[in-house]
Image (tube, rainbow, N blue to C red):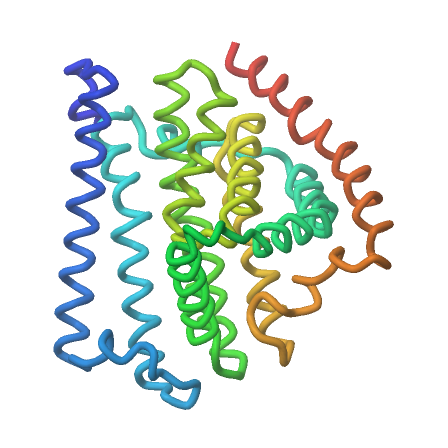
Length: 309
């Protein structure tokens, strides 16, 4: 159903139409969540700072609204745009093919391998301090970071199997699908077609991916993570490995928090690699990552290109 493809729009026109679709979906999502919140709990968004783990009804409502918002923000726009500009939505989003299971197994090992090094980058990012003249900006960014972390903790609060499944759905499954649809399936694809420079497009889409999270003290590691997802898509020719890697990365955080008494961002898995005794794991992990990366980011791309040709 390539409704608009026949008009042969240029890059600027396609970008404008895409932004319009994203904006409309975002506004509809906000409208729906506002109506639901207003009908059930009008003061919910005014009292977010006062939410506590024992306020289960409010937290359940917040999770439901988050689910709806994510659908309209990340999932629906790429599907709608794909139906407008592509011959087939699955093909447009690169969901019509998938590497062999070995590719996914190696992806898990790769993520574990880079984890210690990534934690060091996260620690360095958190340690960034601004000049005294920019102290107000630093305090504002720190406030946004603390607010984001607190909201994440609230979303992950609760115990029991049902709660864990709900948290995995909202914090791991939905972001993996929605954000990969948007940033790798749509934006990265669009930038590659425009720049004709895949590596530049992957970096730009990763920067956008990190920026929309509005958390400066996780900005640089999130850019690297976005680049990892981007290269998985580029070299595999499929969006599925990035969705899987994104899901697995978020799943580790959800499970780590659920089975730990620590706060979000301070669990054992978050600190692994940041102590002097862990330095050997950092180097060992990077060596393993290099060898696995040779397969993930080279061999599969050759197969994909041969298949296309």
